[in-house]
Image 1 (cartoon, one colour):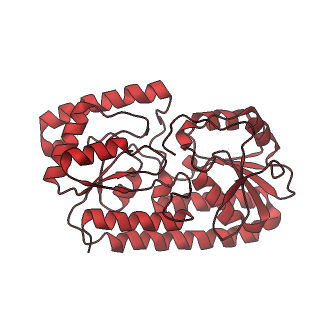
Image 2: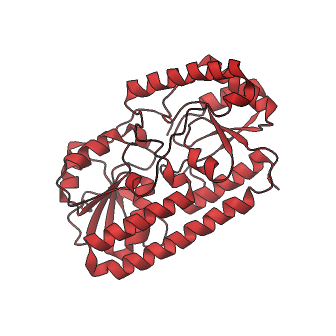
Length: 336
């Protein structure tokens, strides 16, 4: 979806079918509202949390996602109906710092089990685009300082300041596995009758995530450059995990417009570091990426932050899209 600021309606709720280890799909359903299923009802904030709940919960859980497929999750505003839905659920699984309206609604709800994924791993600061400035001299450090000030001005305006650190932990398979283990333990405690299955499902998911981590390690081992350019600073943890350098056009908030100084710096970085590709994502407009690519003679491609699955996604679930991301990165970085 390229249109920004589309809010979820009061009648359109995303019900995620409990498919165990199969593909996670979603539909809108009034009859499948949380609290009406007889299962362990989990309300998840957006796709990466819903995916964890489905894989870990298997046949024992009913998962409802607050964010519709195709909706940019940073922009979600909770409806009155969704607030009521939270009150009927057995558990809420969310990532504090990504969606302010979700944080507020869950914080005020009487739900017995509130699982904050941000507390199940460690968060770090990313998205400043300052790390590369030292290599390019004080002039560019000064430019980047002003660019970053502009970013924070926009972030404050939109309310997405991510004060607790970079929330995009699911893009690092190792951190995502840590979160999965924590979610599994929370499910076991909240629904002890099915604890053995939750434990088994968690172990299987963690094993798959470790295999994905190994695919990234081996797939990116022999590359000609470490630097990649994205529109949205979502890939800081992934870059850190595999020794890459993310240079983002905007900050952690995909709404942020880059400064002229930032664009000029990126043009210089692209030339000096052998950057071939400017990446954009499926849920945000590709206009800025294509403009920068056109000005620098680079190609464009998709690097998906896996914030939602739509018919435009390069895969039907988290693992398929992440493997598509690996293929795109290998091409862009000249991996052999």
